[in-house]
Structures are given as structure tokens and as C-alpha cells.
Length: 119
Image (cartoon, rainbow, N blue to C red; front, side, top):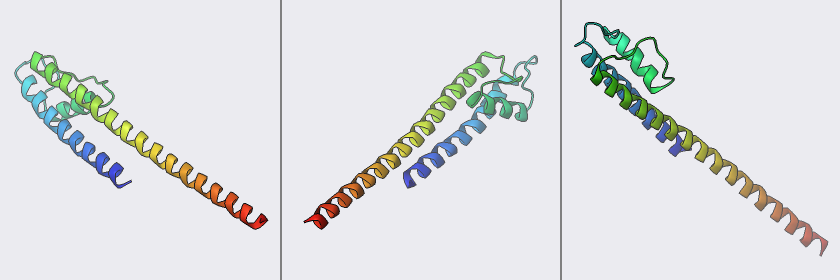
């Protein structure tokens, strides 16, 4: 369980860092174009959060470099999401297998106790 929390905290830290760095880089790329719809850091932060999670936003980059940053944000967001899902699934599987193992051992001990009492 400690490993689960450690991995989830690590990926959350990386996720937050990526969001803020992605917002900064996107803003730097988009400020070069007067027609860009990302005009301030809050718009860039909104875009960065959406790009790394649900991927739907009314704010998006229009410059080439802004879109390249966006592609990396999307890839990293998917990667961090799959790491978390895999970690949680593995931890749950381990807990279930430990429960099944303990249950099997208890059943064997109970059967052996019954056999000894019969003798």
C-alpha cells in the first residue's frame, strides 16, 4: 500500500509540473501570433489542464510550436493516466490475491483441525 501511495504522489507531482510547464511554454509560443486565442497565462493553464486530461477546450493553440507543445502535453497526460490506472489495478490484484491466499490457508487449517479431532 505504501508503494501505491508513493507512485500516485510521484505521478501527481510530475503531472502538476507538466501542467504548469506546458502552460508556460504554450503561452510563450502563442504570444507571437496576434490571432491566437491563448492570450494570458490563465488561458494557457486552462488549455494545459484540458490537454493532459479530457482534451476538450474552447481554448487551443494555433501556432506550430504551440501545437507541438500540445502534442507533448497530450502524450504525457495519457502516459501518466495509464501509469496510475496500472498501479491501482496491480495493487488491487495483489490485495485480492493476498486475501485469497489467507482464505485458502484458513480453510486448510480448519480442515486439518477437523481431521485431527476425528482421530
